[in-house]
Length: 68
Image 1 (cartoon, rainbow, N blue to C red):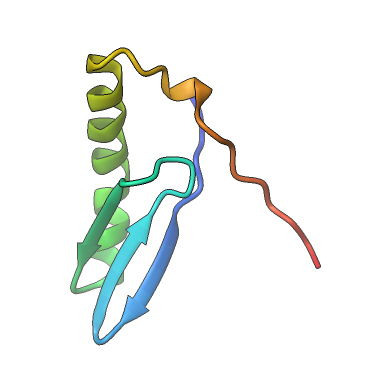
Image 2 (image 1 turned 30 degrees about the vertical axis):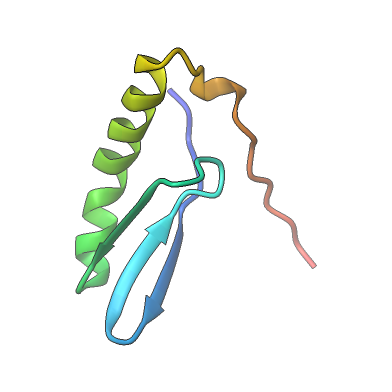
């Protein structure tokens, strides 16, 4: 099991989230709770799609946390 970072954005009364390590993997909703609730499901679905075309998700870029 791996942990991945998601970035949650708030714009125009909508929320959306992206996974920097997985380009093209997004979710959105009208509430923060809705978006947070979708994160695991969306990421699992995205990884299953990658695996179905023989792309190993573990080969994708990592996201680092940087303190400044």
